[in-house]
Image (cartoon, rainbow, N blue to C red; front, side):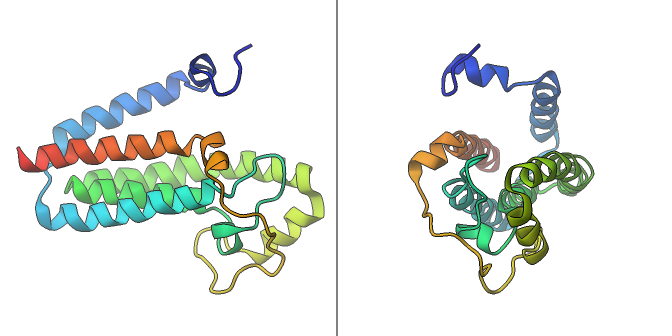
Length: 187
């Protein structure tokens, strides 16, 4: 059994479906992206906001240890999904391709969100019981509330927690995607 944090452990997380999706997305971007500065800059801003939201959320998320209700989780139940959506939307805009944006919407709302929500709701309900039920009712899934959740905890953001959640790797991937699109823009 691979030890968490090692390269061999990371390879156990890679599925054939995930590898195929990365290849399809990469090839699609290579062939259909037509970056243009007036699309690229707003898209980059949206993608940056999405990754910043994911970094903020991942630094608060203590998976399976406690019900996370601090940071962005005090305002929105699924800040990681929201961040991923913003990155996808931003990448589509940077690529100046409506098909990529539409594919992002379809992927996000037909596959990713329903799959993750079903999987995570069951686990959170089993792990945290009534605390989860109360939080689930009080905090919106995707559109942040104005005021923080009244029952939000006191744990703060932590770089160690961010690393434990592997968000630094996601940030590097987003940055590399940005650099590829920037290269395509200036070539």
